[in-house]
Length: 484
Image (cartoon, rainbow, N blue to C red; front, side, top):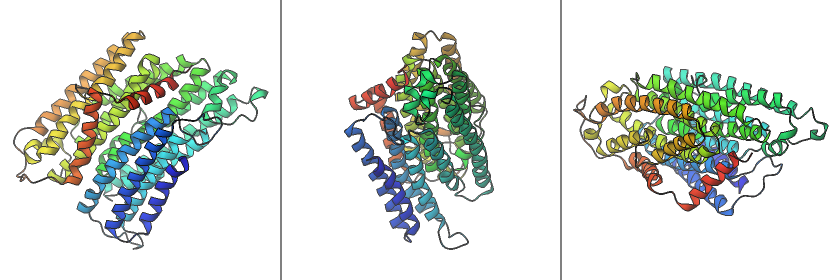
């Protein structure tokens, strides 16, 4: 099944380059997404097997992030059908491939690279997979071929490649950490094998490795101060791409940090990694709050919100076992909500023709369904009940109190308060009032509203009830983080 999950996007991506018909290519996109989503559920139903020294495998932690990525991709694929139909582009100069075929092929390959990253159990394979996600997604960011989108794509390539280069140094440090003990010679460089023999690894080199991983993969995750690529890439990308960048790609980098964090925990060095995670998490939240309160571009606003929530996840991962369940729940809630918001942002941009907040008013009157979903998405992303983000954020805050991290909890609450005010200062004029332009109220395209509606409904359900299989998966993933 693991090979199938990798083969599906590989075959779909190659096929999309060879198909001349736009309609058939879009059908391949949706079919690939459906097959991948189905395969993930089949894998979930089969259960987990011991990973051992395998280079590719799946555990509860990986399955959770794979489920999130596959769900978001399916919704983004459905949305993309309408997006591509409404944004036709001519062939690029060499005439061999249309811009749409390049976009669709890269979009499907992006799913494949994220799948490979999530299932990678070898530190080297994981590194290559994360770098592959950069290469697959860069053409998606520059799809509009505008000066700003091209700049964002180059900025993304440069900064993330530097971050990945630093993560490679972390890989080398892990290898050196095992070289001091002759009994570890020939030890497979898999996350599981390193965790099983963590006590024999040289502590100084493990600490150094974690610092390089945190900076390297933290760049891809969007943690401050390594976040500088993220606002441009998220705001200039087509909306379905922004949804995947925020809701799925950031989680892949976060997974790499968690894998190494587990190794440090089993080596008795959890305090070191915990403090770094919580420190960068708080910095990310306050920096995001600073930019949110003065933001004038609603897609950049959502990008800074992603930085905020990556900070929340970093804090939850570093605060101890009491917050790990909340971290896993919050990873899903944030991804679903942010995917919903970016898709709705695409609807708003299409209707109003601008990303400037001051020029977008009266959304609820111009496009009622999108307007309601926009308001619901803001309520959810700010952690307002009854949405799932309220449950996960409350769980994290409660866990911080249980573990005695009162200062961290107080600072997190302060940052959340600042962000809440900044968000609603922007939301209320956008949603209500007289439209800034004379725009007729027209029926909204189902391709544009059904995917965000499904994502919003899922977050609402998770705020009221967590299905038992999903609750078990959260618990199993959380137990892996605290298994030291």
